Image (cartoon, rainbow, N blue to C red; front, side, top):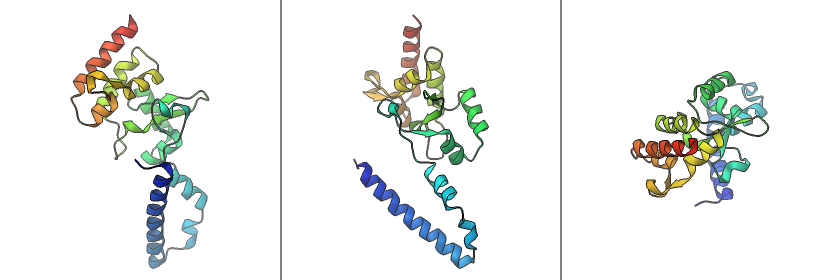
Length: 174
């Protein structure tokens, strides 16, 4: 596994090549420099998709914050809030009121795996968001010592994980 420093170097190398390519194409097309005038906003947009770090990283994972998710999805904050309210995205609230969205729920295309949402909604009937997120990331013996999130992402039958979720919901409610 790569260290954070190695991952940063790889990302910076790739970004450098892509930025150089973009600027070369802009020069060739005669694009005025003013198009790239707000470099702070461009840098903010580029880094918005990077996972942020919070105290819950050890338990759950890195997260996107609302600003990062709105930029990645290309939607408004209201659209993200609507997804949270509908339960179609896994979201947890930090102590300061900020919403965070675990990265493991998203596909490369930015969608949330529907089977994870089914598990999330089942668990949420009996527990708070952090308990549910921790449950989804905790290795389960009945899933071959994989977490339910990994089990689903690897394409295993979701019914197995859903049965475990229902059993725990019943136990929590007792």
